[in-house]
Image (cartoon, rainbow, N blue to C red; front, top):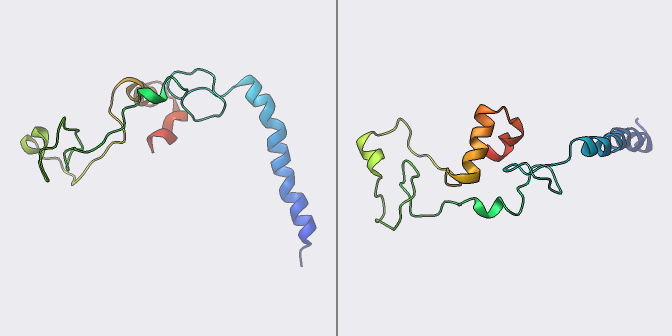
Length: 122
């Protein structure tokens, strides 16, 4: 039977090693804003200037394409794009409008190999 104290000691070693190696890494590679690359307190966050620039999508929107409408057109109203060229899927949704900081982040992931942005896109 394994000794519980031995388990605690061995499981704590990788954590202590990770913590010991983390501070030089943070010194060499400080966390930056996912939008503008300014220094921030934690990795994977947006700075105070970029966060308010994200426009979160709210209803009303097209139930198929997720395209936002300027005003409520009624239940089930489709966008012109969904009517003219019906997509091969039932529904698509985005969390934010593709503009400004959101656009920079998407293009950074796609064209600048910024894989650090992938968690934001998931």
